[in-house]
Length: 347
Ligand SMILES: Cc1cc2nc3c(=O)[nH]c(=O)nc-3n(C[C@H](O)[C@H](O)[C@H](O)COP(=O)(O)OP(=O)(O)OC[C@H]3O[C@@H](n4cnc5c(N)ncnc54)[C@H](O)[C@@H]3O)c2cc1C
Image (spheres, rainbow, N blue to C red):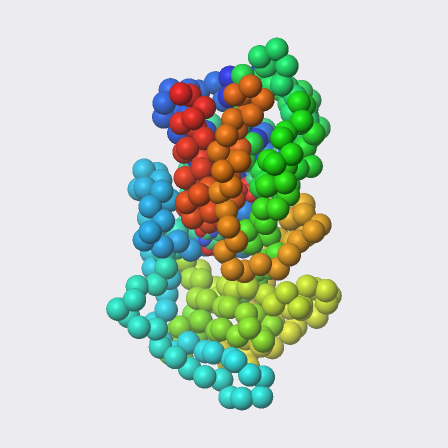
């Protein structure tokens, strides 16, 4: 029989939830269950066919993520940026080219793709992760938290909710959460929930051979940002980037045609010899995006102090990238909040 009771239940098997579980495990707290709505783990981290369709990059100042990668013995490597990069700033003007300054090191990527980190975190307690388990109600009575899901009822002494705050407003909490907290949840944009990514794989990195970095930038273009996305061992040759949101409402076929034509125009005919093409529109994913989506690419304010408090008689905590006062929205914020929630839970 599936275990439906645990001292600690974590809702969401994204980076934050899995980091909390990892931190609890390291403190000897192994009576844990993790409930995940999707059929897969990772949340907004998704590496498919060697392409990071969700989170990809981090910087030196993302210290919590860096330490976690060190702890998990996962390597990092620099984003490839050698050669000519292309800037398209006007549809009628010729393309502009620029070279990256080598004295400014580029961002880091995670060897094996960002999902390598998720897989390693999850490996410790794989049997404790219940996927396809959508939480709908959280009720606290008589010193116990009862969690209602499509997969039955679960009981816990303490619970961490790592669902993006705006999505977590869809859960019925009993007793009701304070209005100020509900407002903060509703007003917290889920970082990158409006993003659409594309990845195209090739038999060889033809752009490198032609002196291109693979970087192609242009807010007016079908692909607003494109980067070299070859794997660390250079066995997989990929270009990956962000699709212009204006292409969201055209058919998938038309979008693909336009994107490939755009890449061909600036990087060469070799683009049409692609091996595979992947797309992911996060705005269509109901476990990340809500219907009242806004297009926000600037970092909104994250880490509302309401997310730092305990609720339901000290049994309920919120975590996740958007709750983090440090690098909110980013993977580093997800790790920081996950570590912090685990620490608070066992104090
Ligand atoms: C396209 C894209 C590009 C990005 N690029 C970067 C980048 O380059 N660098 C960077 O640092 N960050 C980036 N990010 C942000 C990064 O992905 C997030 O900061 C991080 O993954 C968030 O982790 P989390 O665990 O807080 O949330 P999530 O990953 O959203 O995890 C929450 C989990 O809760 C689950 N869930 C939702 N509802 C329920 C429910 N009712 N019941 C049970 N489970 C539920 C979800 O399925 C999900 O698995 C990007 C994100 C996207 C989408």
